[in-house]
Picture 1 (cartoon, rainbow, N blue to C red):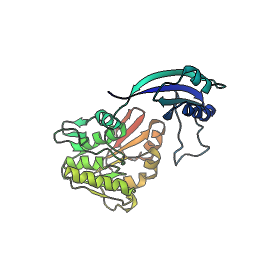
Picture 2 (spheres, one colour):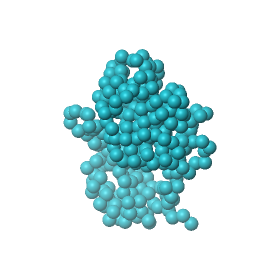
Picture 3 (tube, helix red, strand yellow):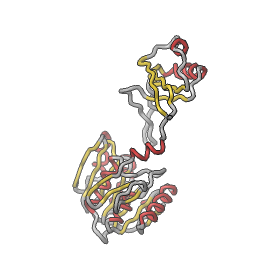
Picture 4 (cartoon, rainbow, N blue to C red):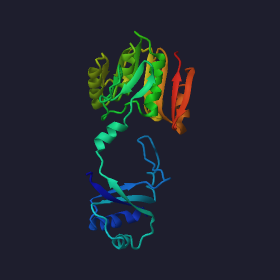
Amino acid sequence: MARSWHAYAVTLPRPAVVPVSRALLALGATGLQEDLPAGVTAKFRQPWDTGPQPRAPKRVRLRAWFDERPADEAVANALTGWTFEDPEWIVQAEEDWEEDWKRNFRPVVISERLTVAAPWHAVPDALVIEPGNAFGTGEHPTTRACLRAVDRFAQPGRTLLDVGCGSGILALAGAKLGMIARGVDIDPDAVTSALAAARANGLDVAFDTTPIEGVTRTYDLVVANLFAEVLVALAPEILRVSAGPIALAGILADRADRVRAAYAARPVLDDTTDEGWVSLWYGGP
C-alpha cells in the first residue's frame, strides 16, 4: 500500500514564514516548501538589468507535510498573531517523482520528418535528447520555434551554426536533416552534453567553446535561442557569420523591439509570439 502524507497549506505575510515554519516543525512537520500564492508573479533580476533588486512578493503560500495530522488547535496556535488566508489540508499519496517526470515528458513532433524524443520513448527515427543540465529538449516554446525554423530552412549539404547551442538540439536537428552543422557555446558543460547527444544519435556535429567572435566563416543558416539582451549584444557577429536565414528565439515579448531594431537590416520572414515568447526569422543578406 502506498504511503500517504498529510499536507497543510496556508497563505501568510512574508515576515510570518520563519516563525510559523518553526512552529510547524515543532509539531512534527517533515518538510516545508514556499510557493507563490495564486495570481502572484515573482520578478527576478537578470545580469543585464539595472536599478534596485525586485522586491520579493509580500505573501507566501507555505506548505508543510506531516506523517500524522496534528490537532487543529495546535496548528491554530502556530498561526497565532498572524493574519492568514486559505488554509487547507489534503491527503497526498507518495509519488515516484522520477517516473512521474518521465511520464510527463512527451515527444515533440515538429513535422513528418523531425521529432524529438527522450531515450525512454520508442519513437522511430526520432532525434533523441537526454533531458539534463544543458537547456534544450524541445518542449519550451523558444526551442520549438527554432526547431521549426531548422525544419523550414534545412537543405542537405548546406551549413548551419547554432549560437549558444546548449544541449545541441538545434545543430543536431539540422544534421539529422542532412545539414553540415556546428554548435558553439561558452559553457564547457553544455558542449560536453551536446557531444554526448551527437554520439548517441550517430550524428557527426562539431561542438566547441569558440566564442562567436572567433568564428571565421559564414553559414547558410544561423540559429540562436538566447535572451533578447544577448541577441542584441551579439547582433553584429551573428549578422557577420550569416550567409542566409537567421532564426532567433528566447525573446520576451516586452523586449522584442530591441531585437527587431538590432536586426533591421535583414528582411523579416516571420515574427511569431507563443506563450509570451517571440521568435524572429530573417532572410539572407
